[in-house]
Amino acid sequence: QAPEFAPGSQWIGEPLGRMADLRGKVVVVHFYAFQCINCRRNFHHYNEWAERWAGKDVVVVGIQTPETAAERDQQKVQKAADEDGFRFPLIMDAKQENWNAWANTMWPTVYIVDKNGYIRMWWQGELNWQGATGDQNITELVEQLLK
Image (cartoon, rainbow, N blue to C red):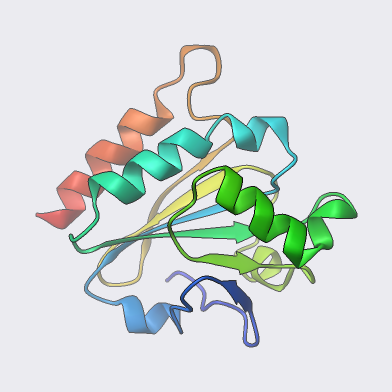
């Protein structure tokens, strides 16, 4: 099962509540740090997914876990999210509570959670690093889970 979002998570944008409240939806959770270059190379995929599945039973959630001092500043995180065109809910994970709950180990990492709350896949690193097809793999899995 996917872990719950850490109690007291600071949401940027509309708070989603608990992971259990998202049952019946496919959830794409991505851990990132806004200044991380490897993370930045995935940003357009997150935006494409949020747009592609808008109005469907898919929720994209970003969890911004800081790597640098600047990434601990919620105003800077919000400004960067606006500049990067994020139109999906974000958690400001300054204390790494979500990072630890998910036993995450690196930036960026994407998790796909099925409608029953089970992690079905995760991808660590850039989605298209050296010809990798992580974005396609995730897109195909999400489409399958929607059926």
